[in-house]
Image (cartoon, rainbow, N blue to C red; front, top):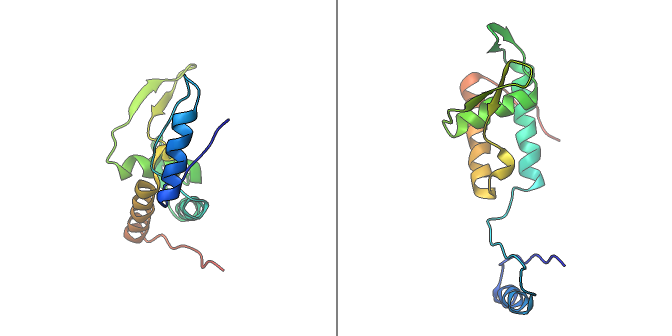
Length: 131
C-alpha cells in the first residue's frame, strides 16, 4: 500500500513516522520537494505556445517555426545553461540527451517559469490575455 504525507504540520509528521515504524521490511521511504502544480504546468505551455507561434529559430540551417515541445527542449537547456550531450540516432541523425522539466521540483520549476518570462520579454513574445 502506498501512502503520501505532506509535511504541513506536526500531526502529519507523526503519522508519517508511525507509518515508517510499522511498515514491513523492504519498503522504501522517500522524502522530496513537492512537484510542480497543474497551474505551473499550464503556464509553461502558454509560454511555449507563444514562442511557437511568434518566433522563428534556426533548425538544420533554416529559420523555421518550432513546435511548443521543441521550444521546451531549447528553453529548458537554456535555463540551466546546459550543454547537452548528443548521441547518434538509430537510423542516423542526432538525438539530444537532455534536461527533463518533469524532474524539477516546485521551486526550481517556478524559477523556470520566471526564466520563460524573461526570455519572452527579451525576444518580444507576448502572451495572450487569459480569461
